[in-house]
Image (cartoon, rainbow, N blue to C red; front, top):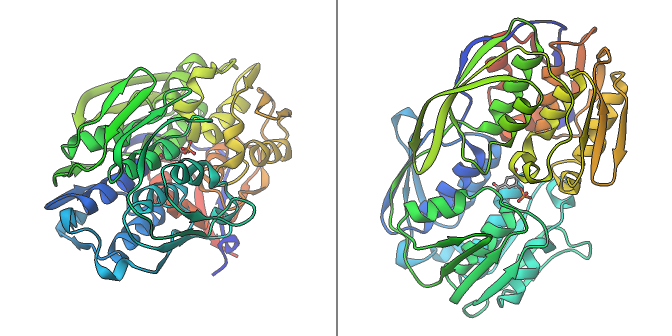
Length: 442
Ligand code: S3P
């Protein structure tokens, strides 16, 4: 079925109440599968996200010869390749990573120096996204990776001798690029050192440590030496703050809402959405703060509040990078103006999230000004509703679903199949706490 055939129909109004545990963190789930696959011994992963992006990583690991069993309760048991390396089946593989940018970029790093040749590809959206940001540094380490002339996937990885270390300053704040280099560094000769222009999510660093691999983080630098061995461990994946974000916004904008999101990952390199919503006047409280699998988690209670527009601080941009579609809806419902700058990276996500959100907001009657690296949103105008094209981007679809809470007319969101990449069961979860949303098969 064509992805555009799945639509969300959201009836205006509704209040978000009760409690909800959103599915496992996508970024952490990918890393858990990849590191467990190369570790020595058997790892168990609890609450791994069953979204199609993570299933693409899981299928790639299996294709590479890793045995992964599904135990009762959805626990994944991964029999790591360890010092044996990938099976012979790994050579010459063509891996399809669907819509998943994290799968293709991290796997590119993981496989570039593993003595195998393979091809990495994906759907039409993934094959339009920039890949030189990973292939450039990996090539400097000695990898041979061919892209299309436009610098996009398919990526053809050729068999090479051992990679060498690198000291690399990232040209953009990107956890995927940082992680690709660190993963390539595991099998490289010498040291890799990645320098970030601004802190980005540090799940790879935390999880390497969980698997017993030494890694040094000092200021903006992150360093590891190749040639070591990861040891299997058990990982529990926290609920994904990026999925929780839609409900944080929904409950903030829908009068009388009072909603608790349980066991959400609140890693300080991911919690920008909480800071930004609080700056806008949101009523958000954290409780039951603890740590699972080396990651901080908390229950998050959010109650409806009067929001006001803000200037988004530049330092918060990488810490909330996936949450801007939801935050733009909050800004549209806030009084006054919200200004985002320094966020050009949003243009190369699953869609051009600045333009696609601007088009949707404008179609709904919200005045916006598009900037090369951001947007200005004039809040406080009635949100009309009507048709929205998500451009196959899961986060655009879920953001506009929340706008239905305050819209004057039904919102019809097109091309929603990719919501399953990060949030399988979104519609049922959203209905269970009060959103009036239905799926339609066009
Ligand atoms: C991710 C990093 C971010 C984010 C993506 C997941 C990760 O991408 O947008 O959804 O898991 O490392 P960039 O590295 O391109 O910023």
